[in-house]
Length: 68
View 1 (spheres, rainbow, N blue to C red):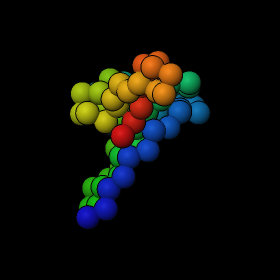
View 2: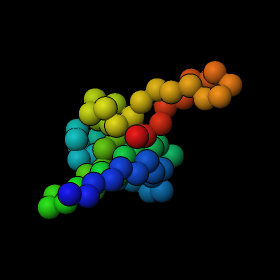
View 3: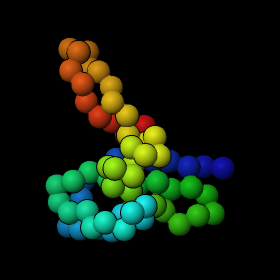
View 4: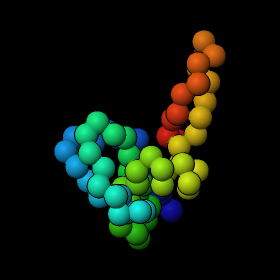
């Protein structure tokens, strides 16, 4: 089974497959692709809920959010 997650920036507008909210530029979203399932586009809130967006610290100690 192959699956992958990509963190992208909206260039126009898309609809979140998790909550149905319209996501507009310049918001970020997760594009999740899994075998035998249609790809999912998830807003930041739905990505956090599903554990796909995590808070991390960079080498200078600054906190940032990143997609897994």
